[in-house]
Image 1 (cartoon, rainbow, N blue to C red):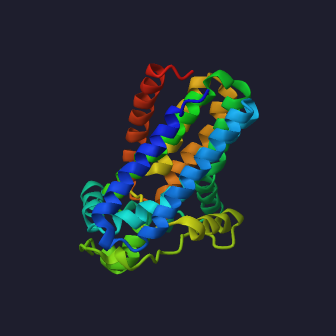
Image 2: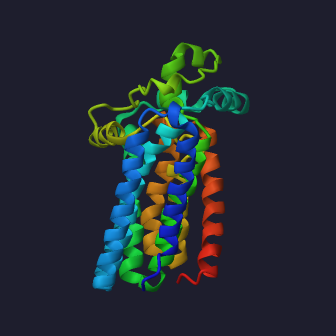
Length: 307
């Protein structure tokens, strides 16, 4: 009972890795002290939840301990931007590859070809369903597959931190930031210049396309304004993590759970391109990486005897 859980070791390892990067890049970082404070807050939260669980080990404190670890995900996502913006931006490479592969920019054309209000709302619904789906899958395991709850939490949370490592080392911002920085006219003309360290001092993004008076459109804008940064484009963690969640749902063998999540998963895959969040290749990379990450983490969980 007093051991540190495997998923907590994942978070501690991520923090140690990023602290080493911070030491190397200290003079180039914009907010290094705030980043250290975030890590201190994370350690404090983990220590408090560990102590509460030791004091009263039960299902409730078990769930609260996992919920506290889920909370750290929102703290460290913007953190990837603070680290990777000191590196040269790579969007021109990915946008150029997208052009060679599809002979166009799907993210630029998708919303133009499908401008209908109802379609825009479906796309926005798919994208904002990301966090509710996490809650659904964890609550399902907690209430109906409790013996496998630790394994599901380990796989889900660890998948996020794997993507965070990729995002720190691979500074790709996605269309909503790169298109605005370069200019849509150049993008439409197939011109994809390198912009170097542009995002070291800029974080403006394009407004999402679609029906601006829609309910889900407003939810999407609130979400973006609250936490979106010029980071985390390749691969799409929205698609990758949702793929992990779908595989966790399949593992329960509950058809009701799988088929209730499936429409949102499909919408998610299309929505990331529709709203300018990702290039189409990011989606394919998210699908592939999500499957790989799930298989690896599930194997690791079995070795550690996480039920």
